Amino acid sequence: MSASSVPHVVIATRESRLALWQAEHVKSLLEGLGAQVTLLGMTTQGDQILDRSLSKVGGKGLFVKELEVALEEGRADIAVHSLKDVPMDLPAGFELACVMEREDPRDAWVSAGYARLEDLPLGAVVGTSSLRRTVLLRALRPDLQIEPLRGNLDTRLRKLDEGQYAGIVLAAAGLKRLGLADRIRHIFETKEMLPAAGQGALGIEIRAGRDDLKALLAPLADTGSWLRVAAERAVSRAMGGSCSMPLAAHAVLDNGVLHLRAAWGDPQGSATLVQTQSQTTALDLASAERLGLQVATALRDGGAH
Image (cartoon, one colour):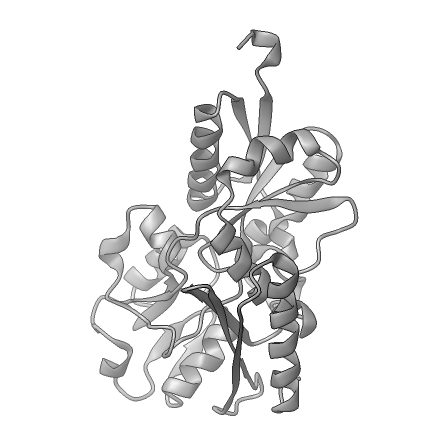
């Protein structure tokens, strides 16, 4: 391959340790395909605003906006995201070019003193800033005192170690990717705590029309993971999904059948969940999204809003 034909790719990434791990992971894979890759590290609004919950300051789009500006201005070619942080509707002119093989999508219980959630004393303080986790925890343990927990992964673990919480709930994927799996005391099965749409999956965003990048990224895509997150994100999109939406959606692909479960909780304090599920054997992105719409309709019929 001549030097002139070697593709050069600039990856826009947040500068948290986990975001950099994800960008370096994609960089390594692309270099294995013969590309030259550099990283453009950026600090987003979501990284800077740590004293308020995301639902009160603009949602998860705060983690991707600056990266999209870099794409639009031509300073970067691709942006690597945790898909659960990506708004359900991308701005005009952008598209999701690739969903990579998914890491563990489940939630993890992290605590110094308590092996499992059920071991906590009445009224114990648990940390999370996710409304989804809040309503699911409330359904499991209505007695708990759930307090906000913001910051990157290392900051959250530090706050736990300082004794601010009896335990915290984090995505298992991030802990595993950073070699922190030994901090996990218990991984919640999905029947206990349903994951967020896209949790554990990495997505690569590009400017629309960059067919050269689509072709380069194609070997990194995982069809099964893409189908699953497409169904999950369709539920959230149909429900107006954002950080202020206490919604969980999780799909499993098993023997040619795509199964999708979703749950919605009342953010005002009721411990009752609205839950539903459905499935399809038509395995393409359009069918996955139709399944998501069907499940969202069933949630609304059940009282979710």
